[in-house]
Each structure stands twice: as C-alpha cells, then as structure tokens.
Amino acid sequence: MPQDDRLYRELERRRDALVALTQDLVRIPTLNPPGRHYHDICAYLDRYLGARGFDCQMIRAKGAPADSDKYPRWNLIARREGTRPGDCVHFNGHHDVVEVGHGWTRDPFGAELDGDRIYGRGTCDMKGGIAASIIAAEAFIAAHPDHAGAIEISATADEESGGFGGVAYLAEQGFFAPDRVQHVIIPEPLHKDSICLGHRGVWWAEIETKGRIAHGSMPFLGDSAIRHMGAVLEEIEEVLYPLLATKHTAMPVIPEGARQSTLNINSIHGGEPEQEADYTGFPSACVADRCRIVIDRRFLIEEDLDEVKAEITRLLERVKAKRPTFEYDLRDLFEVVPSMTDREAPVVRSVARAIQTVLDREAGYVVSPGTYDQKHIDRIGKLKNCIAYGPGILDLAHQPDEWIGVEDMMDAARVMALTLGELLLPQ
Ligand SMILES: [Zn+2]
Image 1: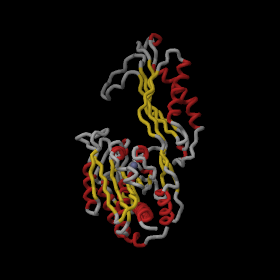
Image 2: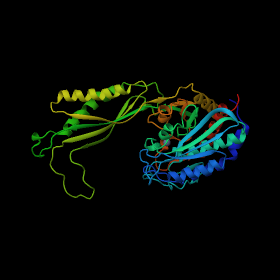
Image 3: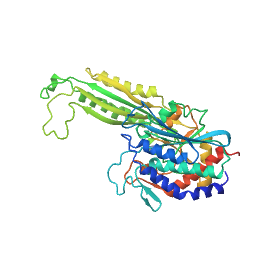
Image 4: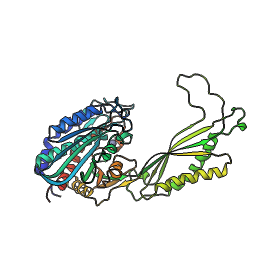
C-alpha cells in the first residue's frame, strides 16, 4: 500500500480538531448505568456530522432493556454516499462510559490536555476512538471527494451493559444487514498496531442449592444449603478447574492467561439476607435453606456451548450422587457464542496493510477475552467482515486517570483513513 501524502496533509490539518472533538465528547458525561446524557451526545454528533455532509438519524431503542423515558437509549447513525456505487465502510463506537470510581487526580469529565495526553473517563474507552474515526473519514473525504461507496459512522448506547439498547437494537432493525454495510471497524482501544478479530464466548448461569431451615442450635434438624454449596465449590475446585486448564485455544486471546477456558464465580449468597448497613443487631440463628452462586464461564471457539452447559450439569449430578438430600436448580442467565473474523477477510487485510504502511511494522492479531459489540453484528446482523481496531491501551479502560495519546489517535486515524482508501478507491 503506498503512502498518501494528500490524505496525510488533510489529517495533519485536523490535529487540533481531533483534540477538540475528543474533549467535547468526554465532557458529555454519558455514564452507564444508568445511561445519562445519551440524547446530548447523539445530538452533538448529529450537528457535527450533519454539518459535514452526512445524513444523520437519531434512533431511540424503544422498549430495549434499560430504555425508559427518564433514561432513553439514544443512538446515532450517520451515512455519507460517495459519487459512485461501491462498498459501505462503517465505524461503530459506543458512546457510553462506565462509572468514575475512586483514585482520580484529574477531573474525570474535564478532558484536560497535558502534553500528548487527554485525561478523562471515556478518553480511551472509547471516545478517542470515535473521534479518530470521524477525523479519518473527514480527511479522507477532503482528499478523495470522488470516492466510491459510502461511509457510515455510528455512536451507540449501552456497550458497557451488553449493547442491547445499542448495536443489538440497530442490528435487529437491519442497519448492519450485509446488503447495506460491507465492512465494520469498531475503534475500541486495542492498540494502534493490533487488529482484534473477535472474542471468546460467555455463559452466565445461577446455581441454587436447597436446604431446610431449622434453629441454628440444632442444625441436625435442618439441612444446610450452604454445606451443599460447599460440596459444589469443592467439585469446581478439585475437578472443574484442572479440566478447564487443559482446554487451550488457537484464538490469539490477550492476555495470554485467557487462552484457555475460564470460570469465575461472580457472587455467592446463602442463608438469611444481609441487613441494611445501619442495622446494629446480630444475625439470627438459622440453618440456611437457600444458597446461590452466579458463574461466569468464558469458552473457546473450539468448544460447544451445549457441552459447556452439560459439563456443569454432570458436575452437579456427581455431587448429588454423593449427598442423599442434595437438590439444585440450574438457571441460564446469559450467553454469547464466540466470534472470530477470518484473517483473510477484506477489512482485516486492508487494515493490516495500512498498519504496515503507517507504522512500518506487521499488524498483530488479537482476540478479546471478553465480548464487545461485534457479537451483535455477527449474530444478529450476519456480517462477518467486522473487527475492532482503534487507538489507546486496553488496560487503561475503566481505570482512574484514564487517558488517550494524541499521537496514537493520529496514527490510528491514518490507518483508518488509508483503509478507506483501499476499500473505496479504485486500485
Ligand atoms: Zn469499550
């Protein structure tokens, strides 16, 4: 892929605009939960992109999980046609950010520029990525106004809480249908030299053990659900964890510790409910008649979800065979199958060549340990030609003093703009 001096000049002219756009987006505190200021950020981008020749639609995910009149789930889609038929390249960024948390030394919504860094919640994850993709599109259009196809930019809700009021909703409405959009780049912060091909699968489930309540001074008259759960936990510890450690994946998951099947126990609740914080008395003496855990199983593209579930059922049946009064419920909460785009897919090859040209190094290929909005584009939208590529360091996401580097954003914008050239200009 050749360098494109005209394109680079258009990008360089927009360096200050990139900083200003990032700052404006960060200063709109789109906290999720509960989902604040979604309308404000979509209206801002509607004005911004509308002024640059994009046709914009603001779409509320009416009736989606968490959508309410108090906290409506707003999304923005902007599309700009080229001068001739061709493919559509779509940049999708989530506009929501996670809670601020403690430990900040900067104003989380101040978007302070200090040297090369802009600080604030959402700078890295992922308003810097959204801004970089917008500036890339602007510069590309200015340098090559005669391009083919179309460019789309979307800012979507709720990625941090599953994406159901965002990309999932838009995909259900047909916005990612393969006849409408052919290439999708999600500028999540996975470092400017790496292409994220997809993610592992997820299965969340709740296991409940049952018992019989009795006075705590005579536990032999009851049946402790907590002791039963203890047996389940022991089986997980002694049998399941060693088994999961043997299941390795060919997916290039980062960090490397996630290149195997994993299981987290998200929570445990048993016995009488915890009292309010201002309760000053003691608990009462009871045998626990219920105990619950929520498990978070991350599985590999080599694994089958039915088998992942059957593994847990077999485990519970083994415990039951050892404990005569053991009873349990197993409830599915949530599942996402793994997604991995082929390395030879057109968007992957184009971005890889652009990384080589801009950064003079070979692109890295990674897979995310957790899921992101690609799952909806893949499963609901049926579009496989989708990756995450964007500036920023993933480890900084959700941390105090989150920041994004301006030069990193510029480099990622160069890569994205060259990618547009490869996909939308005659070769
Ligand atoms: Zn993100």
